[in-house]
Image (cartoon, rainbow, N blue to C red):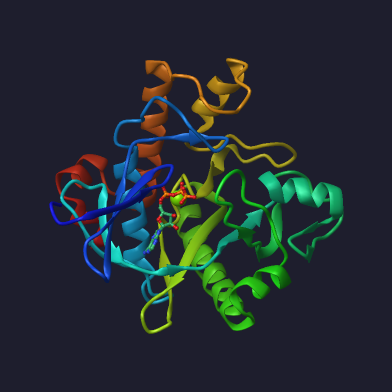
Length: 286
Ligand SMILES: Nc1ncnc2c1ncn2[C@@H]1O[C@H](COP(=O)(O)OP(=O)(O)OP(=O)(O)O)[C@@H](O)[C@H]1O
Ligand SMILES: [Mg+2]
């Protein structure tokens, strides 16, 4: 990595330029809750996110082009095509949760989609909906309507991003459901390549970019236990933390429980033992 130029740090990833066309995305073990990065790492979390994203990238190429070029042997570094990222987050919701539920409760709509009356929290939607959000440079992303998103990226790009996002979600949701996991919603980030083509970037269909719910515990009418961050969220709530920086240190049992859940999500979805991935990351590409 001697020639890589550090471009910046996200909450979870370090970004390096390998050359004019290629980036190196290195996923750390940092964890954020309520948009605050906590002082304690979850060992191997970055590997889980990297491996899972690559697993989906390899299986959705026929649906949509993506940025993946290669995985490095450390299991947390992705060589990828450098894209011009769209200024919107492409969220797909198959179930009513989080800000979608909040918006529906107050307006009966989510991002301009009018939904049937009488839906409960966590209910399955009649059909998955595309609910774009702004990419806030600081603070929380904000839901916007399709018309607002189209004004930001152009009507044609918007339509293409919507179609691809729904197709990717549908594929992954069906795949996951057969393995006992509900993907309630997920966020994609697209960019354009040198030739102006739309390409899927960032991470995809991971516990950090999605709500994963254990299907055997699904019970609409309230919030669902999340597959991964539930230990962390519950612990943070119990400490009485005010959800602003700095977050609390995590005790070892919370770290271990969270790590185990991330790895379980990886193994259930991929059908690959995590130890095999650590040994040779290429196994997720097969
Ligand atoms: N192929 C790509 N080309 C250019 N930028 C990319 C590509 N893939 C991902 N990115 C950007 O790299 C960053 C990934 O870092 P990370 O996931 O840690 O960020 P984040 O905390 O989610 O968001 P933020 O950038 O707001 O801090 C994101 O800003 C994402 O938009
Ligand atoms: Mg990110």
